[in-house]
Length: 374
Ligand code: SF4
Ligand code: SF4
Image (cartoon, rainbow, N blue to C red; front, side, top):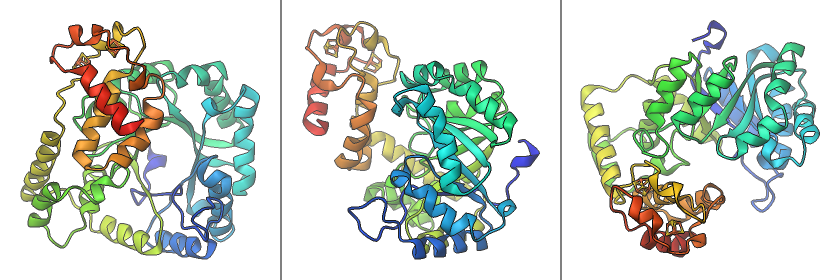
């Protein structure tokens, strides 16, 4: 890993779920609580703060200015923020995000700048808006120290992006023990691709949107039997901390107690013992057995679909619902992951089922998806 990235703590502070004074108002961040969280994080050796142009409708960046930038020396922390170019109406607006972020944060430069949620059809917008060269120019100008991108696409897309842009400094990927061998996310292969390109990884979703902090009881059982004193979330974080080529593992924190617990568990982090590894393997097997649709993401089905339904992604979300026993969680992801081709577009022509080597009753499963998620 590049020497300048050897930060002392691998725990990163995600600033997308900060405490609110009014639960109905995303901008009403509780600054006093947030300051307490920042203090506990820094006292525990943390340095990496992760925000974005859109978190808390922009208030996450201004709250960081008040709680962090104005209270600590600039060289004692690093800040990452992000541009969602695909949500901007034109290149000029997308490129103006950086200046606005710097102003809100009250800094002259950001340590990490991300082109956020690259992949799928969104990549074309980053290309059309010239965001890659924009990031290079801003790095040369000193307003960005390191630039990279985040993505939710698979390893082949990651490989293509890193070939096209071999000078990125880092990438941000969704990695956790639930998605490690998932045929759609393919977290293990994504990590291997990043390492092959010698690009360090910021891990997002280490606890899969909090689901691994509160998994179904039968999944939790082997973990609690092995180490009853450890939180279930700590298994998810340790899985990520101990992977090679990891720059930071992000945790979206919402209270001072959560910061203290994460800091404490990070401090106690050790590689898994053989007993712990076996317990985690058992939990992972239980999780994958709960995913009963045997889709391998071979994608033969999508080629002939006249309605461009995103079949493997939808089946993966049905499996996620089964594994987490949480429909609302999967439904929230469906609202954007299935947007390019939702299940309700299916006209039941059957072309996909004729192509599926797993013999999956795709049309029936899409009906279930409409019922559960739309
Ligand atoms: S049955 Fe539905 S999902 Fe399958 S190819 Fe036809 S339209 Fe697409
Ligand atoms: S063809 Fe079958 S196994 Fe392959 S991606 Fe489609 S549904 Fe999944």
